[in-house]
Image (cartoon, rainbow, N blue to C red; front, top):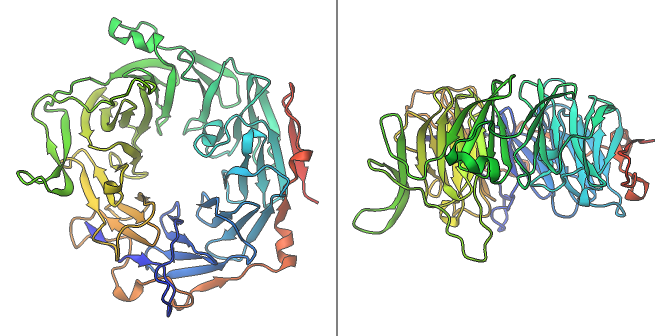
Length: 537
């Protein structure tokens, strides 16, 4: 593996040391890294590791940052505090769009970009309204009663169709679920209907945009409804047609907990409260296979089982985790619950890789075990057993069969694991001794989208970020140029040739400024599903 020089943000010529910044993110295209500091946003090139642009934040931007994110095409950056939302140009140009939220309005819980760089989404507290702000047209569209509005669940009730950017939104009023499809741009309603659900848990467009999928809550009987792209009913899946005696929990257990759609549009994986996952073929939406997690795993030629070992043999001292290949039958570590805890079971995590050939799953009652399934043969290919709960599974967006894994706990804060079918178990990447100081604050690791042959990972804590290449040889190209003259600390004015973007003047800012109306003017929830559009004057 190859490691870039650590990039640390600090004040020059002072005794304050490193500046804490929990907000440092790579752009979706993998070319830039943005770091939010108290008075500015610093944008760096991944290739050169030098500052490309410094964006000065408005002096009245006060309060804790509630959102910091890139736009889908990596050209703009969003920063939000309690009563202000700012969108800046990250590459060329001096675009600066602002949105003000009145103090009398309900505070937003989630703020993010929509399907394009010129549109943002705002979810209000208590599900009062869902707002779409378009900086291109200087208009805001408000929709009452979004069903999901918290940070952990908002994405389940809102989905943008690939390519066309149609919005599908799940709302709830007077005890009834409603689905609406909105046109791109003006977000005018094209179709709305009441699905035959008691308590829908989520909806999503298929990656190819052909299907709109809605699934019932896990508290209800298993049910997934498939609609065509224009919102017409197509198929109602109500669980396996002929469950075997050992699969009776599929029919009588908890309902749907997760729905995963393959990127090639050929399969839909439906997981519920049992140890089984049903794989449907599209477009027939008929069950093609059933994946059953075995309570005891028996290694064989086509199934590798890897167990974490983080103590040195015969010494008991702690070391970086290594993985030992099991040769005999092993049992995953199942969760032990006390009599006061609510039982948990089933699978709520299922993800296809970018080639749609592998499916990674995690059972809620065995959170330290990852199961890798081969979809073509419907066989279990690998089982990865950790001592801690796995909290992140992320397939590489471009390279097939390459999985990033992270575990919870302080002892795992500097660790990232990478697995592929040809490796000898998961490879652990420990950055504790690669950073200039100790790991501080919350850490974040994700794949970096690059054009190099070897994959790369972006890692950051509250003071430092670093790029790691999985390259095994010195001759392979790296995402960055390994030049000591090009790396260093973020400092005000220390990088030559960088662009500096000042806040727009009041007159210029007014052209891209949108006021969000107070909740007093929002449509009240009632028996009629209402859409209200506000146009700023």
